Image (cartoon, rainbow, N blue to C red):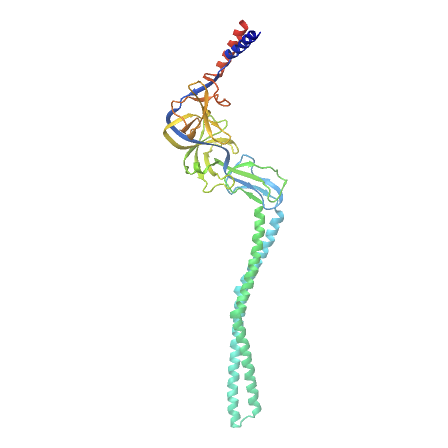
Length: 417
C-alpha cells in the first residue's frame, strides 16, 4: 500500500511539472544613441484674450447688432439698452451746464470788471471830495485868522473834511477788498458752480454711454444668452467675445524643468481630431512659482488664424528640451514605478527568470527614456509583460498568443491520450 501511494503521488506530480507554463514577455537590450527630451503635459486650449462684457446699469435690451459667431473689432457697437430716461436726464444736465457757462462768462467778463470800475470811480470821487474839502478848510482857516469869518464857519468846513476823508477810506477799502478777497472769492464761486454743473452733465452722459455696449477687443462673439426685450442686470454677462486668432495651452511644470525653457522655444500640441501635432512656441514662462502647486506656469501659443481649433479643447503638449548624444535608452513601457516613486525594470537573468532592478532615469522623448544608472547594454530588459510579474518568475521571450497556442496544444494532447 505504501509503495502504491508513492507511485500515485509521483503520477500526480509528473503531469503538473509537465504542464507548467512559462510567461511570455517581450524583451530587448538597451540601445545606445541620441535622445532628445520631450516634456509632456496635459492642458486646455484658452483664447488669446477674452472679454465677458457686463453692463453697468440694469435695463432691457433694445437692440442686438451681433449674433454668436460674428467677428467684431475693438470699439464696435454690439448692443443698445433702453436709455430714453437717461438721455432726457443728460439733456437736462446739459442745459444746466450751458446756463452755468453763461453765468460764469457774465460774472468773469462783465460783472467783476464792472464792479471794479465802479469801486475805482467811487475812490476817485471820494478823493476829489476830500481834496476839495481840504482846500475849503485851508481857505476858511486863513479867513478865520484874519477875523473875516466866524469860528462857526471854520468848524463846519473842518467837520465836512472829516466826513469826506471817512468816505474816501470806505471807498478805498472796498476797492482793496474787490482787488483781493472778494474778486478771488467771486471767481472761485463762479468756477465751482460751473464745475458742479459740468460734473452732473458728464455723469449723465456716462450713464447714457453705459447703455451702449461696445467690444473692448477684436475677436469672435462666443456667447449671447439674451434676446431683445429681455432685461439684463448690472454685473451679469451680456456678451462674451474671444480672440481666437491664437490659442494658449497653459501647462504647469516643475521648477527644474521650467528653468531650462525660454520664450520662443519650439513645442507642439496634439489636438483631438488633428492628424499631426500642431506647431507651437513658448510665449511665457512665469517669473514666479504657483503658491499652491509650487510649479511654474508655461504658455504655449498656437496659431489659429483659420479658426480650426476651438477654445476649451483638452490637448496633450510636447516641449522640446535637452538632448543627449550617447544615451543608454529603453522603451518607456519597460519602466515600473513603485508606491514610493522609485523606478525599476524587470530583466531576464541567466536562469530565464525575471528579476527586478532599480534604475535612475534621465530625459525621455515620449517613446524611449534615458537610463543613467542601473543598466548596461548587456542586460535583457522586459519591455512588455513585466507589470504584475513576480520576482523569479520563469519567462520566455515571445508573444502572448504563443502561450495560448501552447496551452491549446497541450490540452489537445491530453485529450488524445
